[in-house]
Image (tube, rainbow, N blue to C red):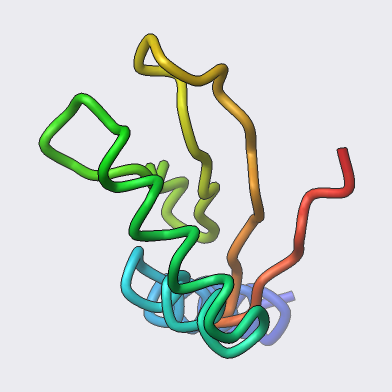
Length: 92
């Protein structure tokens, strides 16, 4: 029982340390989409009315949700989830 608890604590700590940030997501988009992804991020930043830019990150300690919009001009759309420095694209 104590070994299982220790393994769970280590796993939770590893997930917290590897929780991706906004810069990780931007790099992921640039690598995946190339020039079109870079241009899309710039356009999203330009039309965003807030100081944060077009991409929003919600931190859930072990994972992060990345979304765009929701600030009046564009409806909010979840783009991807990030966990362990990996990204899962939203299929909606």
